[in-house]
Length: 331
Image 1: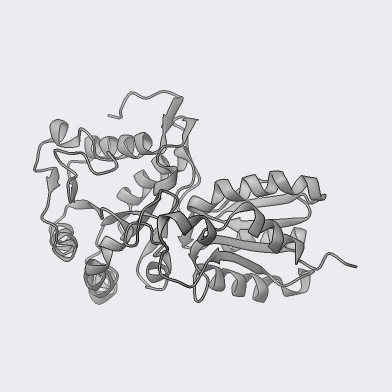
Image 2 (image 1 turned 120 degrees about the horizontal axis):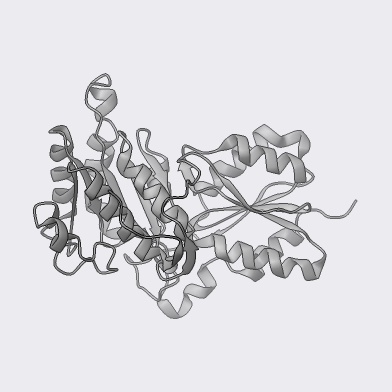
């Protein structure tokens, strides 16, 4: 049984809430746990109403102890449940990294495939909401460098629902990164519609001059930049990766080879960030098709700045267009 939600306009937060509700209705082994996810419904209201509908055993408030929350989820998964953990803010997950890196990511390999851990770790992440440090981090580099984890991040309302349902149904652990600044963005979506699966990128905008490769909170910024670029005579494509691990190398290389120029855009810091790996792969696989080096526009290599300064730190339209201008357009 699924929630009766036909095609209509709703926010990403509402789509995530519907995904959790539908997964819990469909599978009694799905349990939600985290700080304030029960009676309050989460600080972003993603779990709103779940405790009232399914009871406190299925949607559980926990102590403020992230390592304990994820450690509990490991035990639940080992005994046949399918836990969905909410880390209240991105950097709040750091105390749980030992559990994630040492046990969640390695259990399948450690047991020769006999004990997979179907755990979904939801992490609200990224800036743009005027938050301070520990509330606006883009931590994806830590996760993508850890073998054994899938790492996905939706940028649209439809993907928020579809990818979260897939993550919960996966028998392998998934770190599900939710762009906070997009929680309240509205779009028409249909929960019965099929979205591309985990591991597949989607071309959100076609173009012939260059491609902006991005994901999560930077997708709307890239689409805005592509629209602004028309004034300069550039026709920019925009590729939404959606899934960082697995990385859809096939789709990314296909579009890069067709246009010959690429800029990778993300909020995470640049040094050893996801863009470094993506740029390296695109360069190795597409070298003879490139008219210019693959460039990156990222957050600066600093701790997250004060709210009044975050607009300088986050990639914006001007910085993206500046990178496009440096793509060696001269013949």
